[in-house]
Image (cartoon, rainbow, N blue to C red; front, top):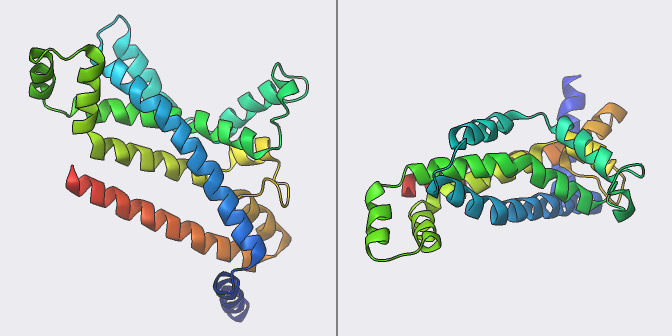
Length: 230
């Protein structure tokens, strides 16, 4: 058994070193989908987080609590919700998003929205009130003040974005329900590892696992760097 595992690891390393086409295809697709979802979520969440932080309104604390509760929402719940929307019988079925990379991007975006919004708000709360008061005293508008505060918290916000990317690329529920794990079309790290392991093709699974671990290490190093700058 030990010899089989060692042999599988050696074969996995060989697949990586020789740039196996299927391995590269899955890696590129996984990065494309997760990076796209993270970019879209960031463009929505950072400004929205700034608005929620800046303005005082009834139910603000409740809204923040709901956002924080959604941090740990199971990925299969997001996948099921989106599946019902974009399946042929769903209200958005005519868009043809089911079993496509675009549908997976939407699913991962929905998954990480609460995470980036919540951590953006937390990052902005950590900025000194003096920055806000100085901007207002200099005649800055609400939007200008929000932008100024976001700039002050940029490293912490970047940390939130990186965390969002980490969750997106490691999730499996949305990828399976919305992507369908179609070879050459919607296979990503997590779904391929799950499928190939069940088939006994552990060499490819281990190779993809190594790449996913390398990405996790890069994410961790980036977070540590940003925390040191903050």
